[in-house]
Image 1 (tube, rainbow over the protein chains, first blue to last red):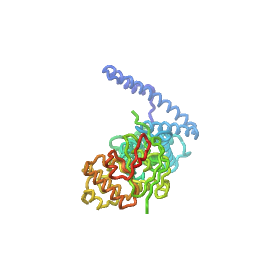
Image 2 (image 1 turned 120 degrees about the vertical axis):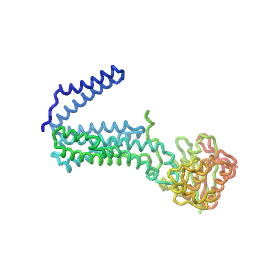
Image 3 (image 1 turned 180 degrees about the horizontal axis):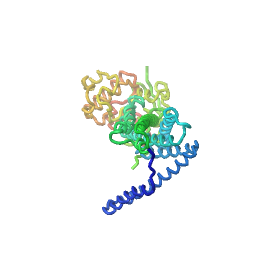
Image 4 (image 1 turned 60 degrees about the horizontal axis):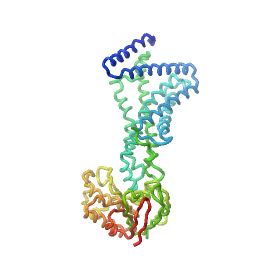
Length: 267
Length: 200
């Protein structure tokens, strides 16, 4: 089975449907038509540019260009993690904590998948590397963002309880233990939910893509399973790193609770 | 065996430099307007806030202890106690049953749900919880502010009893000058971050 190519005419038909929706929105005065059109234009431009970039990347298989691309992906994901925090760490920790945790987990696991699990030659072949890393980064990003937000928010809210334990001579790790556990758990919930409903409620994105691309369904299922497991390991590892380093940062060398290292609440 | 707390050049971004020492079994009473830095002083001594000072306990500098070790020896009791676990008993490892009895509690109190406690019960239990660590210095931040007269007397009695039986000293912060006269042997006033010793 060959992939049926989409012509501009085909794309035009589906775009026309959205434009119809926008027209309806104007007629019904929903006030969302403008945003809808902007979203259509943005996604068109962004995906076409990505397509062009990947086309050159695939044609060249240059390690340096690929490295540059992955770093741009990481930088954007790191910014996104930071932007989702109500109270972020001040200074370079605000951006560095999430970014470094994602780098450690996503990059290591992608590397492992490429060399050991799939066994691609050369290992940095972009057809495999970029989509794999993209999926891992995207999911690890949500996990870490949720876990870190939970950690800092709950620490702030329960600061008196934490300090009461410190006053009684508890170690900092004891005083933050339950908050840390909750934060980690919350970071893992999205992927656990995704694995639980995979194949029943929704057909996962990668499997859909492979089936449309002509792969046998069993092969697509195996790839999808691998990805789900990698994502689970990646978000788990990433959240663990972020929570461990983040909770350490909330206390200083005298085991004082240092909430002054967090920024003010974002509106 | 005497236990002496020596504080030398303690200061923070709010507290002005202060130096004093506490002998074993001595209780220093501190009063002053709200916002004058009484709580901040106790927090700095317990090393809960960033501060710079040279502090020794029985000649051993504070830096020799970890933060947690230090706070087991130099205990801070705030006016509002916090209870994080479900049952009362989970909040300390070794409760002293005679002490609980003296505070007016049956032994079963340790199985009680913390949400059942009244604010007076909580504060009296907080005293027992703090003393269960056998601290050498007690930093009491308005410990009876939320208690009625009879409960306040019980807390005063327990603390004074503890100072009598253990080589420990205390700093007692209170608005109540009569109370300070009852419990402390020396008094000082806090004014805009400065500690002024009063000579009697």
